[in-house]
Length: 255
Image (cartoon, rainbow, N blue to C red; front, side):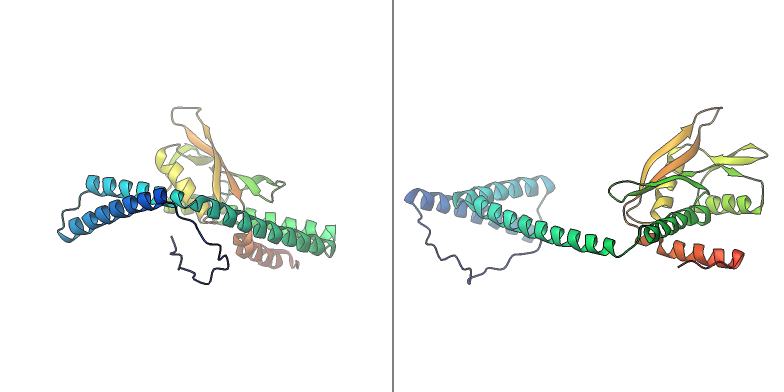
């Protein structure tokens, strides 16, 4: 926690009346704080501080500090500062909302549609080139959260599927052959952890929302994983790679 420096230029010069009772309690709290901080320093100096003793001392210090703050109604000051900060945040949010509204008026609905298509293409590009493969059920909710369901079964219909399986095996996934047509990752703790690590390669903020397990047969397998993405900036390199791939394949150009 950042230390707050004393501000002697604070504008409020209202005098504080301290009663005899408050003075008595202040002396009591100050003496107890001095005593226990001194004990803590002594134990540290003599290299005798133990976890139990440390926790007990810190508990007493914390208790006396809270009593001291309550003695001078510090909670009222904190509440005022919180209300001030909340008002500032609300004002900034309103300004941000207005700027976004004005920006939206300058962008056509068709432009937005084309940009959204690129975002989804970038999401799928990551899945196909860094993940297991096809990403389906891609959608965006009212809060701008992007989600999609990535399948984890890998076929053997062409060279691309073999490359995908090799990439996932190199990443550390454990597979069991289902038949000559493909393989699926085994549903065990190791692979579930690898699923989380794989999704984090897309973005540190990406979330594994749900993992579907196929329990048919003797060994359960992971069928697919639902991914939630709150921030989209991480998709920029995959959007760029998708556009470049389209240009190489079809000679198309996307803005």
